[in-house]
Amino acid sequence: MKQIYDFEKYAPPALSEKTLRQEFERRKLRRQMFLLALAAVLSQIAVFLMGLLAWESRQDFAVCCFVYAAVSIVGSVVIAIVYSYRGKGGDEICQELL
Image 1 (spheres, rainbow, N blue to C red):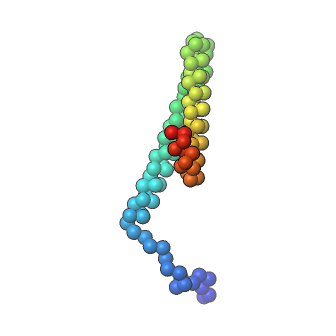
Image 2: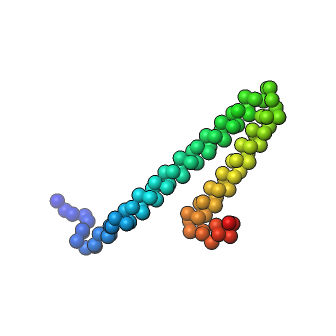
Image 3: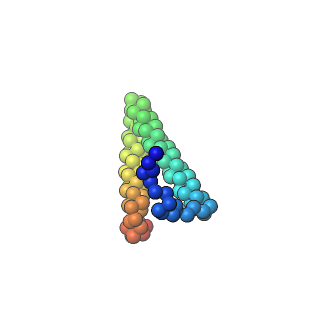
């Protein structure tokens, strides 16, 4: 059978316990951030639905729910934009914002 890859031509990348642990921590942090973002979206939906349910009886409370959900969504979008800049190597931009 003809080999299509020459494994003797290049040395494999060096793996150490430190690099594997760093990769594990990076994946763990990514998973935690995804779960946190999911929880934030679900809580915003819950507040919005609570405002819809309260519209008939307490319009002032419902308006507060809608305003809170809107402010929360805008804040989440801003944080997502800052994080995406940071992920693309825009640490200088993030430092200026902070």
